[in-house]
Amino acid sequence: MMVPAFHRYAGRAMRAAVAWPLAGLLAVAAGIAPCAAQGEAAAWPQRPLRLIIPFPPGGAADTIGRVVATELGERLGQPVVPENRPGAGTAIAGEAAARAAPDGYTLSLATTGQLAILPALRHDLPYDPLRSFAPVGLVAEVAYVVSVAAAEPDRTLKDLVERARRTPGAVSYSSCGAGTVCHLTGELLNSVAGVKLLHVPFSGSAPAIQAVLGRHVQVAVDTAAVQAPHIRSGALRPLAISSTVRSPALPDVPTGAQAGYPGFVSTSWFGVVAPAGTPPAIVARLNGALGQILAQDRVRQSFDNLGLTTLGGTPQTFSAQIQADLNKWKAVVDEAGVKLE
Image 1 (cartoon, rainbow, N blue to C red):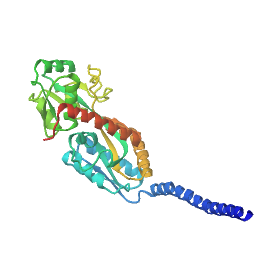
Image 2 (cartoon, one colour):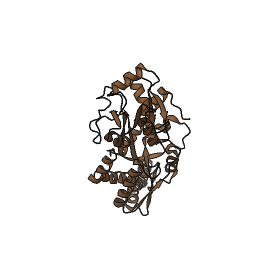
Image 3 (tube, rainbow, N blue to C red):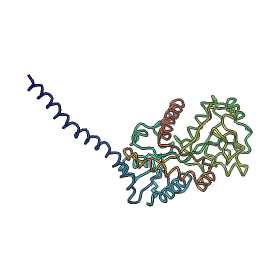
Image 4 (tube, rainbow, N blue to C red):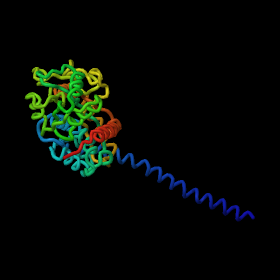
């Protein structure tokens, strides 16, 4: 009777002897993975990077991208080469960034239009705003100003709203293009104020502003950066800015809430993304470098000069912003029945 008991004991001991080395090996393997990822991030980058910019050279977005590229290059020890990929309302750049190898060597300057507006307007995009990218961090944002020509009668945003109510369809606003944030900011104002300003799209900000200055269109809806020179010259009268706080560039212009319409909040942000699947350790290192860049006085000053507010934050903050804006602008698009021609 003792022999079987001994065999049972011996069997258990043998299985334990085998199990302990196996468990140790698994523990070692589990420890190797994060160490390998950290080692990969420490060795990266070993060659130049590229930063895709979804706009042509010139303009605020291109300036932002080039500042980020230059400053990142200094911190990473490798050049970050700007690559302008304009077209299809930023979808061409979005596709290029989404399809790039997730190795940390391709980054992209992403915008509200690319990751929140276009997905609300199109169902055939070659990328998914939430699944195709690894958010790195927000860089800056710009708000929109509602203005009229100096010769127009409106002195406040409430004056404009009352005029639109008295003469339905007779008051129009210009935008920098159909389906842009300029356009949807005007539609947001319609929704919040309960009026119907007629949308008149143009191919860019310059002709849109000129149409208002020439009084062919009554209202301008465009960024503070675009409108500031005309406001300072007295050619345009600003009625409200679509931010939650006043702009340092236009301190006398009331916010939507201060003008009587607290729901009128619309900003367009710029951020840096990498392709989905980029190692988290590399994303974290990029985020840290981006935070250092945005903390510099000279960078903040250059953004202030463009009418931009410097942002920053974690990849998680950026991801939440994308989701929130997707929900917000889809609701505006659906309510206004906005269609891309």
